[in-house]
Length: 175
Image (cartoon, rainbow, N blue to C red; front, side):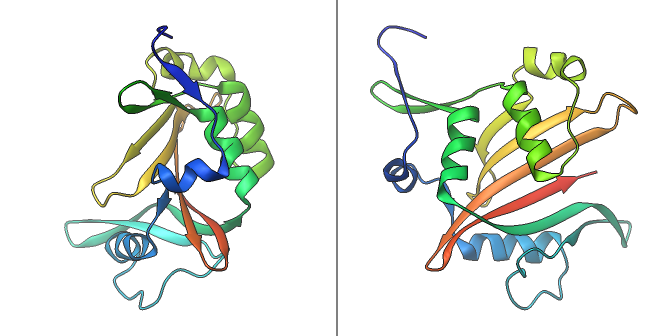
């Protein structure tokens, strides 16, 4: 890290300032476009929805979407382990390729845990962890890798939603 740049630690106060939380209307639009055109209300909590792609008029299931309650401490922990903030004249976000914490986090969530050796190329190319805004402006934390056994491609995307009732994590899992 260069001398004139200072890494900032994520705190609850910074989350709102840096636009980490996604608007519920944006998630609803994303859901309508990607899950099922018959969704008339927002997603139910802890209910898996199939992620569909239409090819030649046929809907093919390519993943799963879920909305989970999450506490603020877990959001801060995720960001501090996967996304660095550098402050100079401008703010920049640097994804942290942290395989050890990724393995711990995925195991805690009951998700498919990668072997470190199968992620080496993704780590070297800074692709294991990514942090970006998608076309709707939804801030995404993405994990992308192949599992060690069958070389199956795995991709998880997480977005965070803040409501009057608490915090939620919008999790997209691609097969």
